[in-house]
Image (cartoon, rainbow, N blue to C red; front, side, top):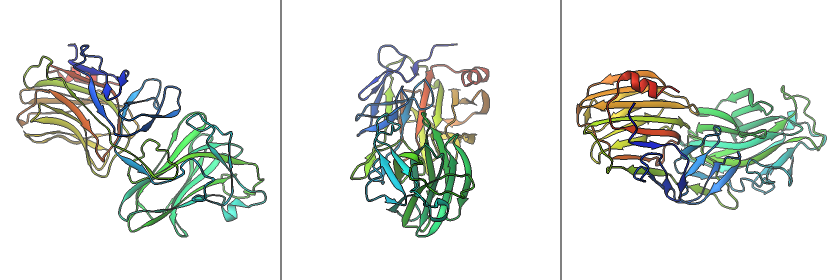
Length: 411
């Protein structure tokens, strides 16, 4: 099989640059932009901050890094790591000091049910109020780790009304129970961050609600009964986050003020590379991190005028779109993907014929009319939309058979 014109497997980088494996002369390197600091999971499995314009090679999915690309987001939860502050209302004791957090320092806290308190009757947890906007999507998240106790409830509500509550066993991350009554578009997740730390999240749309109360409770028993505290036992917590986003994004630490992270973008102009007019094959291995309620574009392959782009529309269904082509939606909603899963897609074209493959299977073959681009630019600008992790990106300057692209996309 022919050698790719461009191969980017995330490994080398510097400020404003992601290096490609091919071509070796630097023409394949990607220009990267992010206007402030951001966090990643490093090779040691710890959350760390990286500086402005430094690409994030993220190891949260295994020993091989991926290039993490995220939209802008804002953590509305001040004092995200300091639960001793008065903005956190307490129905228990918060113990600080000496507790290792997911960033490898001793800045986590322990939630302890006070001696003699019946948590099953009165509750035992942290409470926090937020002002939010009606008919808007949000995601609340927090890290939790078992200690003497291993059960935790994360709950969102308004005044005395409970709108979404999830109960988890921190031994294995299993869901014990869920109660959802007052939100739309509600979803939850729990992700293993190593060293017994889990990140729990709830995403929802606020409907008419303009104020939100978050709760994090701990309890002893799976049936929530006989939970009388001893003043010692509890669970550990770290890193609270409320973001105006329908998708969970990387952790944004805060202190006295809310903190934002700007959107990331990258692009590559490899027009100096040899090309054959209107003929290319693209192979992309990636992990979708979630699905926006809006239209979003993951990758654009262009000649400066015409383009082919991988896009999504409000669900986990993707399509492949071509500007200046009829039909423009060449694989319309045919790629149904799961957040957090590894996917490989490919499209190959020559003249007016296009072939598509996903994870080793044929998706479609079409013959649109119009102008197919000879790729001279590969770019991604996530804007306010959905995050992805890129594992491998290759561009070939030839037209491949369906069998060949199925082979290239087999995971």
